[in-house]
Length: 246
Image (cartoon, rainbow, N blue to C red; front, side, top):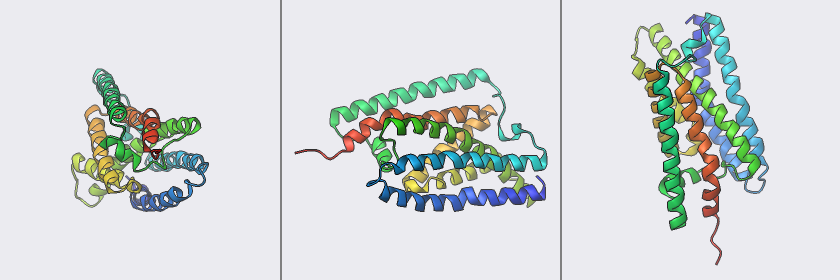
């Protein structure tokens, strides 16, 4: 990586890893207070978080152009083993269906959110409440799956390896994956420290899937599915969260 590309990459990493999470946390707190009385703010908030991640890809594209690097360095290529990739996607889909069927059954039976569902309700102000918002959430899920995987798994792994080589450290790929997962978790600090730990662990799993298959296709698809599941789970959650009538 050239010096110019390395400087730009460092500034970009500082922004997405530290500056933006802190700004997002503050912005979310303001949104959380305001949306209670102005529900239409949720749609505006969604549209904002739909745009910014695509701008990250523009910055990454500029960095790649500076070094004339191919997209494949970001993991944007076919998997080493399509059969394994398709099998893993099918397994995740089946697992998500079973887990959420069990969650919905337990909630219906006990009339209270299960522990996993209760964690989702921690950010209930952000969850889609209407059909229009659920449609937008699907686009947000696709955006997050594509842009966050390219940024946190594809780009950051390349950056951490490049910056370590620049200083003569040559850290292993596993350590670069760990660092990217830490920043991915911190990027979700608006969800609180449980959210940071949960998404950090999820980021580590995505990194493992990326390294195992040699492609971002699998983590992108699974990331989209995990985020999109909210659309099917949230109506029951919000219904249970409503104050009980005497």
